[in-house]
Amino acid sequence: MEKLKSISVFFPAYNEEGNIESVVAKTLEILPKIAQEWEILIINDGSTDRTGAVADQLAIRNKRIRVIHHQTNQGYGSGLKEGFYGSRFGLIAFTDADGQFDFSEISQFLETKKKTGADIVIGYRINRQDSFVRQLFGRGWTFLANFLLGIKVKDVDCGFKLVDKKVIDSIPRLISVRGGMISPELLAKAKKAGFKIAEVGVHHYPRKRGRSTGADFKVIFKSFVDLGRLWWQLR
Image 1 (cartoon, rainbow, N blue to C red):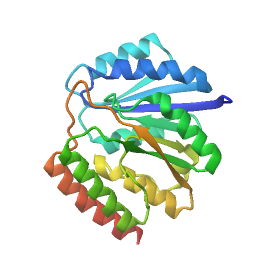
Image 2 (cartoon, rainbow, N blue to C red; image 1 turned 45 degrees about the horizontal axis):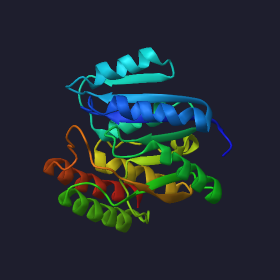
Image 3 (spheres, helix red, strand yellow; image 1 turned 90 degrees about the horizontal axis):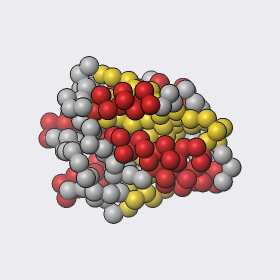
């Protein structure tokens, strides 16, 4: 595969001290193989563990790594926005910092983009390794987002995506801060602006360290409220 001219990769991270170093190390093995120029951004979203300190050490060891710190936890959506708007290069990829994705599968995203001409390539999780409750909520959330927003995807909030920066620069500024809302907002605004979206299956692995916070009932309830508001704004 011909190397890309450049790519930005970012990781939103909240209390991922046990995962972030290995996730970045695996990404560093891949990036020189696929791009001539690249950068990594770590968005430390107000972590209360050593995530920020570990990220700073990684940045000291490699000047292509930058760290953005939030003093308080602002939410997954805020982390994604920092990554999207803080990336320097024309192609942006991100995965979650919990180690449940294999960044080497970025090659499939690049191949799909080349074949389809898509402006956004989103993953959908193969054999999703989450609790039954999270999987049930995920299917319901995708169905509702597809129904209200007309985006028609298999896995709306999969945390592995490839996005042309021209999409981010062209669509109305993203406003969501909650984890469940940021992807529906991005995809709905991109589709409304005429950008092409493609999908690719990615493997999903069990979390080895740390704890997920995405299944909090209050977060889920507020996300449904926000989805209704987004539907009203875009209609």
